[in-house]
Length: 417
Image (cartoon, rainbow, N blue to C red):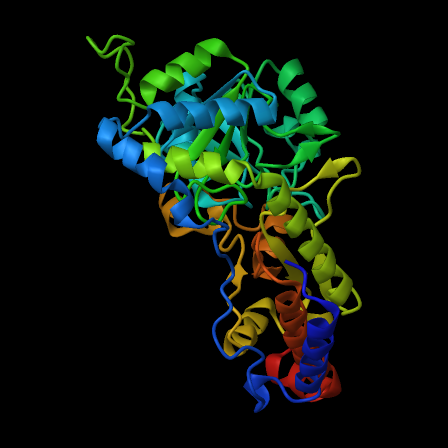
């Protein structure tokens, strides 16, 4: 909802007044009285689905039934893909997709991603081979993939970082000429477009998340999309332990990865508002960039020409020497302003304890990834967020920035910058 002109003028004056004062960490008053959360799921009035919930309860069919099927069909139609299979979460979707494709040996994957991307490989006894991300888009660097391909490589697993489509055309060519499978972790990518085509039908399979932090949420859940009918049939069996179609036997080693009718219903309802949600996010991201673009040391993720990001997260990258403080210090400064942010993705997967213990030593070998993990900060963003909240967040960042600039020599000396 866009604030009316009068309300906006009042908000502008209040933000300007606070910008003239010191940041909280330097003795000022917080920009927000109450905590502004980094994410809020965009939902609807629960009264709108009371009759459907009663129907589900009375039918006794509470999992993977009528509304899950409707949701899957609606998603397949929206994404223009043959098959959409709903699962309990994107992690289980990735695990099953990797198994269904018969992947073995090694899979090439970015380290600048959420840990579930790589977990899905480890659970399938596959070795992840990390490739650095590219400066700007922060997606996997396609130009560095082929040097990592060996006789053990079975697939490439790119990620839509913050909803930003990777170089799909180049990745498809690399996979094709090396006879590799191409599986996309599209957890944050629902609503993204690559050269006019919606995410969902690229590569062998794509896997979306429907968790509360995503553009399209079913509260919890995941969605696997593919044009491969055989793979889709495997996924439908495998999400239910691997049961045969008639339930008389176990055809595959699967998981308990069904999705409930309640989640299917919520997802179906939210899908009807997806374009409005995407549009709002796009406008808010544009406003963020407009208000922060003049600040030295603040940069943004780049989206390739012809592509559209879902805008799942609004992430800024902080160059400490130019900005006047580190990303971590800005995180703490905004926390004092009652603004919740997230260091994203931090630490990078190859820097996480679990992967140290696996003996995957990539320290210093992924410089862009490590720099991005040290500098990225996700700001509050959701599909029903008001523009005046964006203005206040940017106002808080600006007054922190301005204070640092006015006291640059002293503050930088204190921080060793």
